[in-house]
Image (cartoon, rainbow, N blue to C red):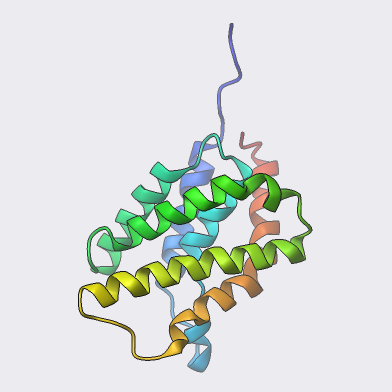
Length: 162
């Protein structure tokens, strides 16, 4: 029995690399507080679109890459992204069929959970954030989710990623 080989592995990797690069860019003025966690958003998309290919292991690996890139506590983002991937995989069938405007609220919850986990880990090691603007990136991610979803969906269809 021969099954179709999965294609587009490089598209997934390239989109995660682009998300990593976008997460390092600063935004002008006060908008920088709302800069979303691009890596988490792209991970959420791929977990919803291809749950059989992108999951907890990818979330953990990308999180470790993010930890090394940001020079933070090793495993902090890895744990948070692995949990976000797990929660996305548990609910992807319900989220995926929802209208795009309803998906944004699910993404808000997932991004807020990721920020709260990182907040908690930072607090445990003695570096808690000083203000509530710490959750603002989740709101920024919610606002930008429809655009990111449409772009990644079109890329997935164009390159026939399966």
